[in-house]
Image (cartoon, rainbow, N blue to C red; front, top):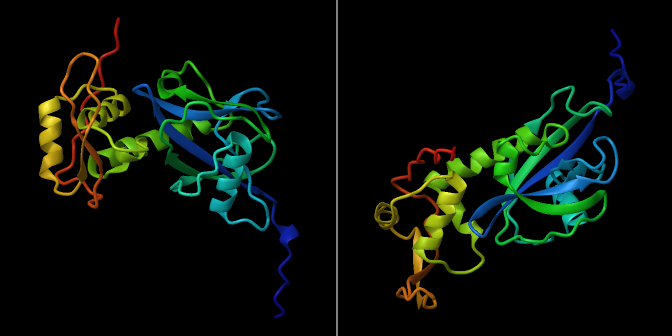
Length: 244
């Protein structure tokens, strides 16, 4: 029996895209990088940076390219971690589209520059999306929520929170990142003791922070240590109760 030759036209076509979740911390507020779409579908709607993978591209290369085109972020040292694959048949009104999502942390990202297919780029408080006040195109809200949960979870047992800093930081500043990301309040003494239990998690620089205007004493400065895992892990506290 002769085997029928493979014909790609026997199968319905579909496309592959990439979407990128970029998280940052600005003035003790956890924010997400969004773009405003310059074309349909969902023209003028807010969305994650991303786009179609070109035939010659690797997935990560496509993510890096789209991020640069739409937001002007081109940091070669940026660690993009694959988050997941999203392929609901109804996620894109144009055709069947499967997207591969990536996420990363960029320190102190304040004023991105929109370009390419993006009319505008802006960092927006994560609380705006989690509260439902700001809706995103496609299924990008689900992708974003998954990325935030991945980050919050990894902060319990890895040094991923150090990626929010470009340079050295104090333990107090480090705790502020946890409080903003987890939307909670942490006991300063307990937090510092937890960090001290994990040797080489943070490395002291031997320098002090500038004196505070309030008259507080300069604090020790640290950078990420060689130990990537936090053991025992920090347990996530319950979020602060919303004000009535």
